[in-house]
Amino acid sequence: MSLNRSEQALFDYIKGHPDERQYFQDKVHALVRANDEAPVAVARIDSELWRYYEERSSVVPAFKEAARMYGPKRISMKNLAELLVRLWVEPKPRKSNGSGP
Image (tube, rainbow, N blue to C red):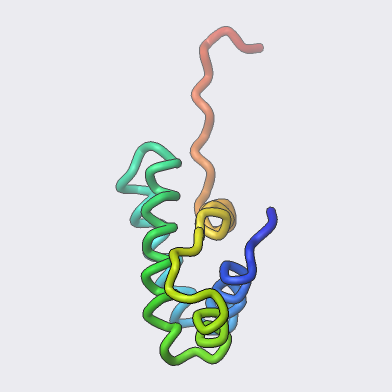
């Protein structure tokens, strides 16, 4: 999976800060549990990641620089949201159709 620069910076930041990582692990788990459809959960996680990125852009040097370079336009965090779901959420078992071996 390929992350854009902003997603990679945020992912590295989260990995390097245990409190932030725990916060997002809890957030990802809650959003996946609350939404049966994976695309809906990913979209909500994407929004949460963007809001966090915007907020932290005023204090985290790597985010500040990106905000200065790219301006205030919205950057997709969808790939990062999908990656976090894959890394942190146990996949749901597939339903069998009853005709298997």
